[in-house]
Image (cartoon, rainbow, N blue to C red; front, side, top):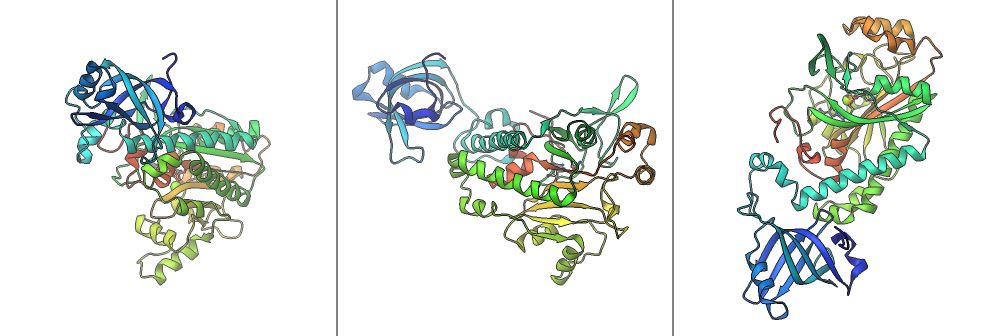
Amino acid sequence: MKDSVSIIDSAKYVGKTVKIGAWIANKRSSGKIAFLELRDGTAYFQGVVVKAEVKEEVFELAKRLEQESSVIVTGEIREDGRSKFGYEIGINGIELIGESRDYPITPKEHGIDFLMDHRHLWLRSKKQHAIMRVRNEIIRATYEFFNDRGFLKMDSPILTGTSAEGTTDLFETDYFGHSAFLAQTGQLYAEAGAFAFGKVFTFGPTFRAEKSKTRKHLTEFWMIEPEMAFVHHEESLEIQEQYVAFLIEKVLENCNYALDVLERDKELLKKYTQLPFPRITYDEAIELLKENGFEVSWGDDFGSPEETFIANSFEKPVFILNYPKAIKAFYMKPHPTRDDVVICADLIAPEGYGEIIGGSERATDLAYLEEQLQKYNLNKEDYEWYLDLRKFGSVPHSGFGLGLERAVTWLSGKEHIREAIAFPRTLNRLFP
Ligand code: 4AD
Ligand code: MG
């Protein structure tokens, strides 16, 4: 809308009369004054309509407006020391644009199923707005971080003919008479990209037909996957921790208001930007768990209680290195002196948020990879193109994947991953 301003820019217009296109998020009124909580997608603030100061029809309209009606208001921006946002608008004109009646999401408490069924409307509420701001900032900062370091953004295919992370959780679809799978990862393509462009990152939707109904799993999630030629795993770990610290710094810098709305502890987040992050081996993690009464044995994968316990033993995100080969993907580089573990690490977030990054150095030995494909029951023919990378100028290379929604959930301090994406796809949800 021409000549209108955004709520978020209020500071620039103090003392000026402006026009704003907005929705009524909430309303309180008495006989003499109406308080309209306005939202325009950029922020929320209060509009004040004083009966004695406006035309009668303006005040009557203000009193009549229901939640989520859309309006164009005109008025003067003022500082408002009592609100967190700091500004308000003294309204003198209201144009009703779109009526709203009996909006289903009222300021009272609603159950999660009801809210999820109304996700298309729930997104308008304050906390959801704040989470999406954090998500947007993580995405923006991701591009900044990798572009500044010479990475080329590369788009890997969504429809693929192969599996990379195991065959048990593939979404299969018919592709003109052949089987195709929704990508679980862009990694194998990113490896081709790294050998073409040096340093790349993919960032796209990935799919896991996981039957797990946890607060950390989506069936469709977005993953950032950097892949770097001539980089060994130790250097990759340094880039990972720098990247995570950068994301936190940028969220602190640019999402201050959103973090307040989410009541996120900013001092705590600040602590997580101090590098390096601690590193322990899988073996050490098993010992630590055993010493503390967990019934685990070497070779087990960690569940949520184990991850949380390990994370709580440190004050920052922690890398767990060198997992057993048997519980990791086929492409990871075997350890030089031990044949039971691979050169990899998971980064475990504090506060029980679990694994946010999985990464590894990649196997480069052709014969080893052929053997691995067989062990994992993967059809060699489908991977010929991938094996080609080991035949024509192969080099050491490493990479990792950060789950966007895991990072959003963590930095927003939310309980459940379903609020970290606009329209979550989970075991039991395909609508809206
Ligand atoms: O550990 P994962 O499976 O690793 C890969 O896919 C590798 N190809 C990455 C790479 O080296 N390029 O997944 C990486 C991250 C996890 O650490 C987690 O943050 C996230 O993706 N993730 C999920 N997020 C939400 N829902 C799920 N079902 C997820 N599965 C993995
Ligand atoms: Mg993993």
